[in-house]
Image (cartoon, rainbow, N blue to C red; front, side, top):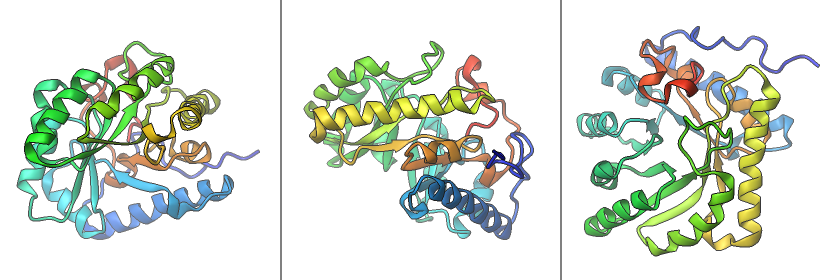
Length: 266
């Protein structure tokens, strides 16, 4: 069977978007790929949220992306996200923090983020909730699950998810929306697919057992190199960076643990 990915740029070969038109073209190309993957799975492409990931992207180019239609942006590092939020506050953009969070950065996330997609610690949940309560706001969160069983990656082991979920109602400032994962970095599509299937299984089991604890039960999975596979396995949100902004020059291990760094990442 021919690969659905023929004609898709290899990781590291995405052209830099430097004009509004470049961004419009890239966004349209990604949406076309989303629609095609959804159709293969008997789904509607419109039901899949595209979260553009702007990590390492200069603020000037982010302004172009917003002019091209981006209204949500994802960032890994809190300090980078906070700086961009403050410097681009004139733009109508919602910021999503999608990387690991230390408790001492909870105040910043609680102040500006629209969502946090990497919750895997009750200490972080408590720190976020305390800051959110003080600010009088709440925050959408996704529980991060380590579906590849790699020690270098953050996220809960699938077996630990039920007990973790049962604790989250104690933190009323957090609105659980679903689950997030990073798949294995490999050219073996079936092994990547297994990670996505595992996250879907974690969600389905939680939905059967404690449906009130997982909100809409959304699945955030899939990046520039594997989002079609993720959509075929039920992704509701895909986090795409390089296919929209172009290849990054900054090493991935600046943002992810070195042994799990993904050149196709977002």
